Amino acid sequence: MLTRREALTAGAAMFASALPSPLLAASRSGRGERVPVRDGRIRLVDGRWLSYREYGQNTNGPPVFYFHGTPGSRLELALCDAETCKVGTRVFAIDRPGLGRSSYDCNRRILDWPSDVEQLAAALGYADTPFGVIGLSGGGPYAAACAYQIPHRLSHVAIVSGHAPMGACGTCPGNEDSMIELIDRRPRLGKLAFKLIGRRLDRKPDKLVQRISKKWSAEDRKLILCNQKHYCQLIANLRESTRCGPTGLIKDIRLLAGNWGFCVSDISGVPVSIWQGGCDPIVTPSMGNYFHRQIANSELIVDPRAGHVTMFKWHAHEILARFMG
Image (cartoon, rainbow, N blue to C red; front, side, top):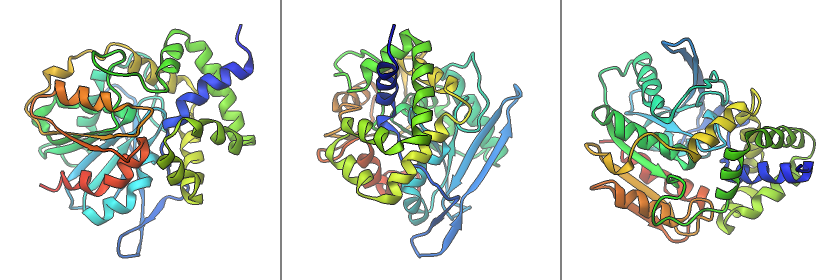
């Protein structure tokens, strides 16, 4: 039987890829004025609630839907909120089922996600308007699912530091993959681990962050640990990802580890860009290469200096500009 320390270690490894999120529901635009961040939620046709947060100040900008990492939430995009304001996109970051404020769905599959996104797009007035999607890290499979299932609805797909299918041919595992597989095999262990982490976040967050940051690249540590705002935002994001308990996060991890329900090589009919950090120890460069090999006519952008989080932060302006038409 595993000790509390072993369970905590298993869960803490999964939190190593979490991006910062906002503590305050507001941001500053590139011109210095304060722009309120807008939260919302819709009722889906099956009765579930889907929660989102809107970023950017241009309400007439092209719509983009952002899919957070694992763990993560709609709050995650705060790291690049300034860039959304500068570029002029209107970005909606969505909580996946059981994470943040979205309802849990014990039967959900990755391929159910495109329908949720389409329903949100319709509710926001984009039923007949093309929209873009960005999937970061564990959100990458969901961006790929949209590219596979609803390419006719999409203007562009950006997969950023995106995790490939587990064990995919030609890929090297990241430093979290063994824990992903362990939690997939032993979900009860995962639930215990994340409960313990929740207590640590409330009581001794500094020690927890010190532990998980050991798995980051040097550039990611510099970005987060040397910036008090980003550091505090990270804590908030970790808490939000398990707002309703660990069940939704465990489901998200198991979907990432399992069969996605489609072949990435079958994606066609939509422009896809793949953004990969050359120093990413969590999603290794081989995973970016995998997506590029599998998706015909995709574009691969590699920054040899970037890590997992810094790839998105450093290139957010370029990524968002792809959706401007």
